[in-house]
Length: 475
Image (cartoon, one colour):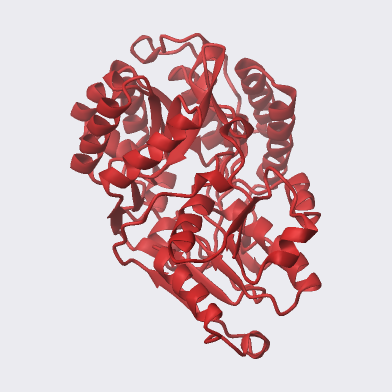
């Protein structure tokens, strides 16, 4: 079995290592290929009797289609499985089975059946336009991820802190989410449910990451505080076992405020920063997305996190069908007022709403009159802003994000570019004022370009670049 990852946010891919461990335990031979790090050599492609492609996010799914298309052109009868969050949120006929949710048992069972020759007529199924799709929410206790099959940690995103870089590992303490934000793919699969990872499994995986050199751990749960008691136990056990390690988490604004009493302990246990989906500086947009928080809550969350010694790293959704020029002005002003210029990665200024198949927005009524058509190449529904200037601005900022990333722009250089681009795009009807000073109680204790972050600045909801797609197609 050959397992392929196209992209996992610059992390060493857990969603290769975890199924590799499960397949090895079931007696199968396994190789892994992380195409974000290395090409797929011809010998490995010929060796494979079956392939599994990991798709935990939109970018990975877009790239996976290119990989599968090439594999089909070279070995048309090769069984190919698609697994991960986005596996059942697409309509591609390039795959024999799609498994999302808690995918490990079903993926192993599929390979077992292949070995026993119980899966047949694959080409007939594909030609009829049908293929098995599985959404599993069974409770699983996976074994140890097979990280020895992956490239070393020094090939992946690192923690950057005060000018120093540290090797970083990636784990998940839970899957799914208890909430149903309408633009998010997680509730489409998990429908408001979560599945917790057992403490002993998590600590064993962290232990092997430490032995690989990790000094920082990213907890990649969709929301680390979906289960606050579980999260507190995990942090305590993590810190007791590895007191020298630092870590980061992802948490909803709503949970930052609701469980603020937990955060000082997290800070003392080594939590350096928390990614949080602020999305917008417009309360109406937040309501349409069913985010569960307001713009005022975003500012309060900054204060709560910084009081706990944790830096906020907000994710943004500046461009939606409902975005107006004044919303962008409010958003970039909020970034300055909250002293977040050094906390926002360039790509965040250009994120455009994705509407994949099954999106909860499709039945919400909030997109009525805005959608154009479904684009299978983009794996989502297309839409255009009612203000054409904003579509052009979004593309300009997306180009800027690539340039800022490769050119190592400072945080202020990026912000000033964004501010100027917004001013030029909307100057005819909205005037951008002078740069706001940060509010005193929201100020960071870090210098702007020394704040903790990961060196990979791309984002799960960002469209892949032409360079990414070209690289995967040439794998």
